[in-house]
Structure formats: structure tokens, C-alpha cells
Length: 366
Image (cartoon, rainbow, N blue to C red; front, side, top):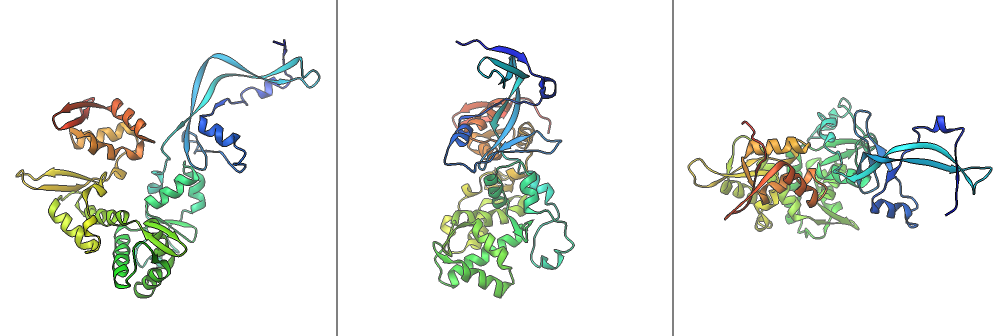
């Protein structure tokens, strides 16, 4: 092994604290080293009051500091003797670790408050507060792919560059109209002409083309002007639209299913099933112990902090079946492994003849 002469650089004082050592997970190394991804970009996002995250085009990573037991020296070769002398530029006592995390999309509901798009809102646009797509894209801690997917899942329109969450009732109306026109115009839900649907909504119901085009894209794939409808997604949205009115006044399961099937029509009523609404409702028995009743209980309204979410869940129910509670954790865990870690940390598993149940690790007062 060749010997090197270590010397302090003249720039050591000004360089101190200016270097950071980042440990890259394998998938990030592959992106950076791949010759096919010359345009790959990494972004650090975060408000001064937030913990920073690193975003690729597809994923979001938390940036965590890990203290080192040994000091790491940052050195550079000497210009006068590059083969025998190196200059110490800085000393590092920590590395930055990158850990995949759920994108911080929950801020959108706060930032877009009072900006909802509803029927006949065109005249209010001039006086309504504005939050642009580009502004949200730069401020929200999410990758580009996660951000676009988040807008779709949260039913947020982009109108003239501004973000507008669509009113749930208006969205249900548009979806019901689309189902009706598929039947009346004899269009296949596997390959419906988008232009025909958009035109009839604009001409007969004054629904702007920009709105109906985006709604159609949320609920299926559009290729070469033809819409392949995601029937389950449309049916689910219409079911949530009915259930949303029963947060405080539960509805019997049979009555709910009857209303739901009536809304989706004869063509799709066979596809109606409660499993489509997992993570949006609670099922209990009525006070007389007879029929099942449903209550609107959306996971999207629960706290995003894991500890606070488990408190809310166990205040609502003292014990949960595994197949029930997992649906209320999907949006706070990046994968099933992380979800299981959360359950292990915040809940206690019990097994009986009915299966696996989870109870709180600590007692909560109702």
C-alpha cells in the first residue's frame, strides 16, 4: 500500500461544515450510475419548518442523520504532488441516510381549502384564492410521479394552471351522467369515444370540457381517443358518494347496497361489493343485534402521524381484525413490511378462533 502525506489545506477553515456524506440505497445508485438515465434528477424539498426529503422522479426519501463512531476525513489530492500528498478539507462525524417514505401529500387538503370546484363555479374563479400546479409541485414533498398520482387520487382538477379539488357531489353527478350516456349512446365502457362523451356533457349539461376530460382520465385509460373505463373505480366513487352522508347517522347495509346498485344501474349492479369501499367505512351490528349497519369512516380523514392514527383507531374500536385495520394504514406506510412494523410498535396481536385481532399497547380513555 502506498503511503500518503496528509496535510491541512489552506482552505480547511472555509471548507469546514460544507461537505456532507450521503449513503445511497441500491435503487438510487442504479439511477445515478445508469447510462440510459442521463436526465435523471434528484431534488431536495422542504420548507424551513419541515424535515428535508430527497425526491427522484418516482420516489420520496427521508433524509436522516446518523452519527459515526469514527471521524471521516474529506481529502483531495495536492496540485503540486497529486501522487504523494493529500489535503484535509473537512472532518465528518455523521452521514445522511436515505429512507423511503410516504409522500407528504396531506398538505394539499389544507392548502386548497375554500378552492373547491362545483357546478356553476365559473363566475367565482376571479375572486377565489389560487394555488397553482407549479407552486404545489415545488412545495409539496413528493416525487413527480407521486404528485401526479396524488392529484388524481384526491380528485383535484387543474384548471388554467390552478388546482381545484372537485366537489364530491358534483363528481358523483358527472359519473352518473357518464354511465347513463354509455347506455343511451350504445357505447362500450371498454372503448368509449371520449369526444362524444365530452361533447354531450358540454352541450346538454354545460360541464366544461376541461373538467369532463380530466374526470374521464381519473377513472380509466384513454388511448387514441377511446376510454377504457375502470368500472371498479367508478362504482367505488359512487358508493363513497352515498356513504359520505352517513358519518353520524349509520345506514343499514341492505339499504345502502340497494341505493348503490340503483345509482350504478343494471349494467354494473353485479359489480357492487363492500370490499371496494375498504378503508372508508365501519361495519357494526344494530343496537338490537340484527342487521349490519355502515358508518362513513374514511382513512383520509385520520391523522397522518402514525402514533396519533393508532390513538384514533383504538378510541373508535377497542380491537380490530387484521383484515380491517390494514386498510386504514395503507396511506401512512410505504409497503406491507413498514405497515407490519407500525402494527408491532403500536398494537398488540391476539389470536382466537375468529383469527388475528389487534388491541392497543396502552390504554386510551374514550
